[in-house]
Image (cartoon, one colour):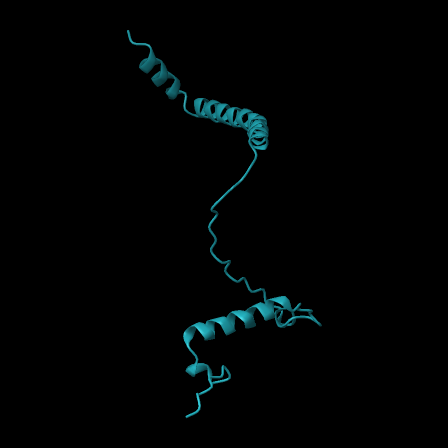
Length: 117
């Protein structure tokens, strides 16, 4: 009795799962290697609609920054924060002055709280 010959040209449903996965991986690699050259405006551009597709989720597992560059970044951040702190101080002072001029009784409460007699 002759030995049966097994061919991979069988139907997709008859193939084992590992062979199907391997074939799909090869097909996917072949599609990724072929360059896609647009020949004209895409369907989305012709329709005039602006579709926003959700971005895929990603997780950062490593962040490699040399120590010197990290130190320089934080020094620059400190110098950049100084004008912001000065501006915030001026705005809070102006707000306090506005409150004192609008509600003069706040000054009396301040004196009564801080100066016990």
